[in-house]
Amino acid sequence: MYIVVRCPRCRGLVLGNTLYRTRACAHCGHRLVLKGMKVIGRTESSTDAVTLIQTLKKSDVTGEEPKFKGFDR
Ligand SMILES: [Zn+2]
Image (tube, rainbow, N blue to C red; front, top):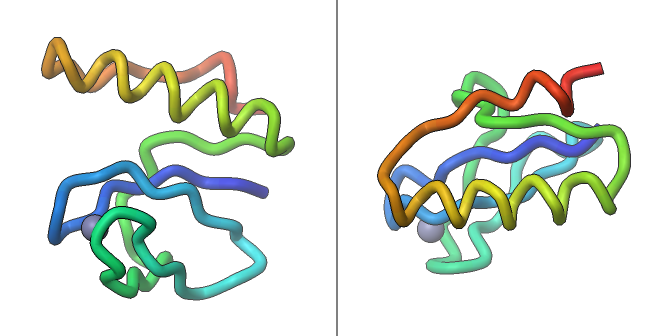
């Protein structure tokens, strides 16, 4: 399963995979330990994950933290 978390260092959105315990931030290289992090969204497919990231980036502009019940299945 794919999860989206927010990098604590640069606040960038990071797409992680629950198969792995850590993930390097694509923006600043910070190594994130996925366990225990606040999951912003989760999806089963990489296609949905890309859509989710794009939606989250748009919401970043408005500063809102939307809910993604549609992706939670
Ligand atoms: Zn980062």
